[in-house]
Length: 198
Ligand SMILES: [Cu+2]
Image (cartoon, rainbow, N blue to C red; front, side, top):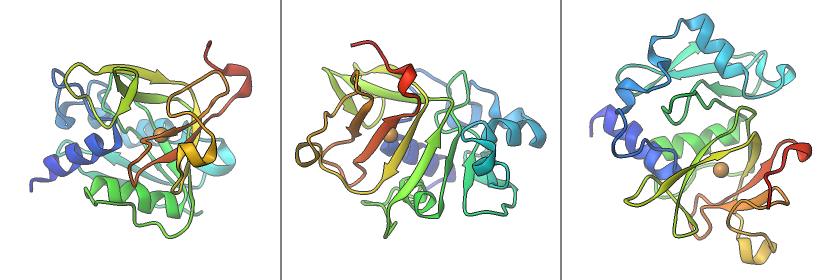
């Protein structure tokens, strides 16, 4: 499998892939592949507060669609400069367990490899795709892109029904994304003062 394809499959599994009509990961609309390392570090670090991101390792997608290490880290966090390849980068900072979760996605594994809960911060928000009122794991035909506000994620198995949580974003700011999948996780909108209407 070509590395490009791996990255694409990974993004698809995450539900953060490009729409069918969009550029491939080699030509992300955010122009992330053409940014200087300094800019990549700035963008990646913007996903979490400085006490987390300031000493984190920095990864960024290169022109071949694979992630490269831009900067080694000095704490347990890793920040990735862009996940979706959309017109604005959507960076994430995640701890060791969370990085295992993301690497499982990138490697198209049937389930995440982390053996403990991971945490991930997306202070710049991100996107998901919806069809018929449900979140789908990628831009399937007829799916629409929906912007996510700044949020954090608990990357550990959860069932919406059992947890008494909804499966779609709502005015309370917490929901289970990818319900019914091994990649189901708790989404919490980061700023309680910035909840979507509803
Ligand atoms: Cu999520």
